[in-house]
Amino acid sequence: MRSRALLILLLSICLLAPVVANPNGPPWINPINGGLTVETGCTCHGDGVPSNDVVVSISGVPRAYSLGESYEFTINLQHASYDNGGFLLSDYGLGTFTAGEGTQIVTNTDGSEPGAVSQTAPSNDWVVTWTAPSTDVGDVSFSLAGNAVDGLNGANEGDNWNLLSFFISSPETMTNDDEENLALRTISVGDFESLFVAEEDPEALEAKRQAEIADNFFSNGNLFYWTTLSIILIGAVVQGEFYERRFGGGPKHLDMRLAVPQGIRRGALSLGVLLAFGWAVDDGQPWGYVLVLGMLTLWGMFGVYRTIVQARADPEHHDLV
Image (cartoon, rainbow, N blue to C red; front, side, top):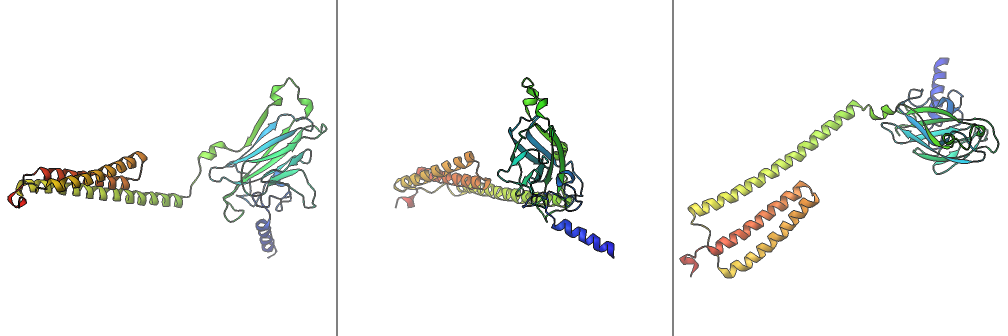
């Protein structure tokens, strides 16, 4: 009974404790194991151990610092599925951090500043300023914890985190002739290959596949239906023309006084629709628009054709009355 109560208490602490990607920033002390968060990470996330699926990088780092010099560090998280997360960076109080946009200075439980900076909200690509000590304190060690989160249900097994440790050498190791020491560098930890082999949920993959099938069926079904209907209409018009000439004696005569204004109206309409059809094709409009405008263009041209053949048809006796 006592062990069960202890387990429930431990889980409650894990759920209530601040975490690396918490909007209020991570704590300096890990509330689960009592260690420093920059060294032990946050065991509430993932399976409680660092994951190489998260690539934690920091750039703008000198090999050796100059006394009192300020450096801009850029902290970046990369994950195959998650874009945002949080971080905690510490130099153990040897230099001075200046909080910038999206970052804040971390305080200890007693209100002191242990020399650390973190995010203020889940994000990425943070820029922080670190000012080297004004006296030579030897090599300066840094610890960086980075956490990529899924944004669901707070801290959970879907989140991943990783740890990075590095140091900046003391000024006595740097010479003015040593260009390598003067150059800034990028330091990373994690497996870059994991960024390209994300494991997707089988149910999500199946749902995506079904959605693609439905969309393809709907799009192609409409395309085939309206294309077939257009072919049938064109075939019906051609068949009507054939039977009219073969068995109906040809098109009926149209007086020139009626044919001229009718031809002008139909010609202007056909030209306007033809221009609209050309614009739709050139602009890459949806196939439905192109099909409708194409059919209207053919219909307008057929109207002009009918006006011409009717005007040229020989008048019969009832046309002369």
